[in-house]
Length: 73
Image 1: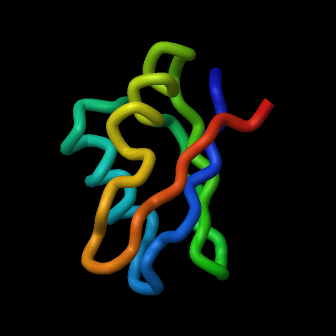
Image 2 (image 1 turned 45 degrees about the vertical axis):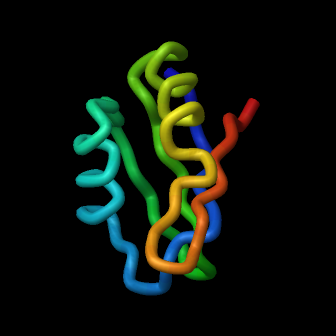
Image 3 (image 1 turned 60 degrees about the vertical axis):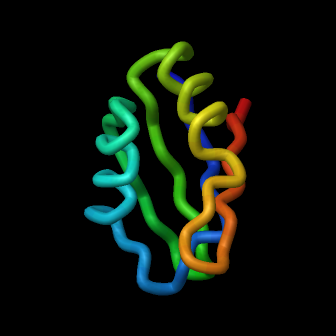
């Protein structure tokens, strides 16, 4: 399992909306933990999924914000 940090989330982002974003990009995640302060931790089912999530969603634009995504080692 690979864990990702997702930062620069909009204030209205919640687990359901982040899960939907991952599903919209055909990315399977097992756990999403959204924290106050505009960030979340996402567990991906495997390394390949984590790599694809970073490729597809890092610098992804939502309104005026850009998501930052990287792997936590």
